[in-house]
Length: 279
Image (cartoon, rainbow, N blue to C red; front, side, top):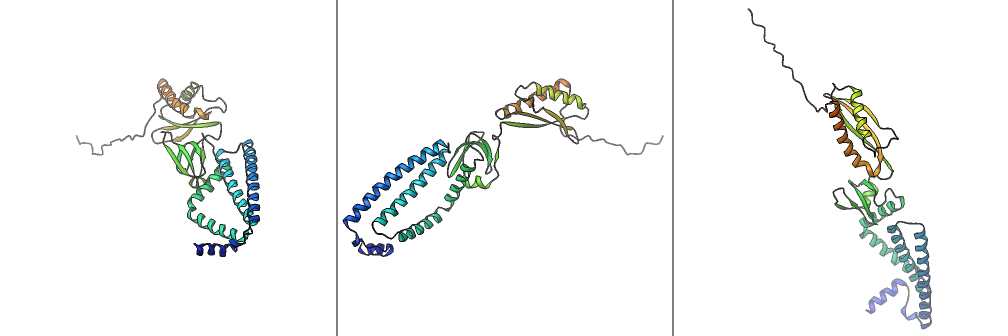
């Protein structure tokens, strides 16, 4: 035990025998004042961040980091009042910090990614996004993981380092979205008849926005059919219901107008090359 104390004294450059009652009382007074100041500063910081409407996860992380830093600063001040060289303590903390950072390198990477997401805000809770190879509704943005619910109600926790390094597609960032759907029709069906049938189907769905105006264009001439692309605008929340309703409405309109929705097929003509029989 004595050897351990001797080694600590040698490392810190400080002798326990140099302590006096006056120094200890002075250090306790300094500690009390510092703790009161830390409490006041933390309350002020929390109030300011709440008024600024900072994300809850970022707020909690910032408060925790500030709390730790203020406690470390308090420890250094108290140590200085006891006559302990601060430079020695800083060197010890630096070595410990390096060892810890190497041990939790992946966690720190996720933490940095989480801070980037919380600060830059490429998405927020309840947005539907694709990121890190996963698509779903964001339920919670944490400091290490982001919680996402898939359309079939699976909960996936994605490491924030994967998200921050990946391409993020946010389907909920804008209020309106465009629906692009392609239908096929026979070459025998007149263009105007097909367009008229599609526009009738569009007009039957009230959720489709009149502005921008719905468009029906010929997008491709295939081997067996002509492809028509329909473009309509809807509110973000109506995207999937309108898309499904449009598919049904177009099929019904084609049936009324006698438009055939063709599928890939191949007509084979057999030619008889045998010479005609002599009479």
